[in-house]
Length: 129
Image (cartoon, one colour):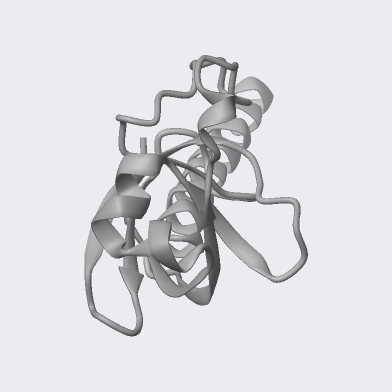
């Protein structure tokens, strides 16, 4: 009887833990949107390792974000023109105060960031890894 009650308590606790983690994961970033300044990687970083271990490739739609997990897909929208692109987080950063995302060169071209240098954008989570 004691073993049965003990097992019941353990199983109940595990079910509650798994359920609460699933709920937290669903709501933590899935509806997360932020606005701020975007910048882009300079070509001198080509071939260097990112925080995820991938090599930086300016021709891939990737980005550095300070908190989203690697593999998270984000939509980045130029607030002035409405131009947008999707990127996959594979690095950490940016480390300059006031900036919320660094994007690859090809992503920067798609949203008009190359000419501007810095740009006010909206960043929305599309999906998780």
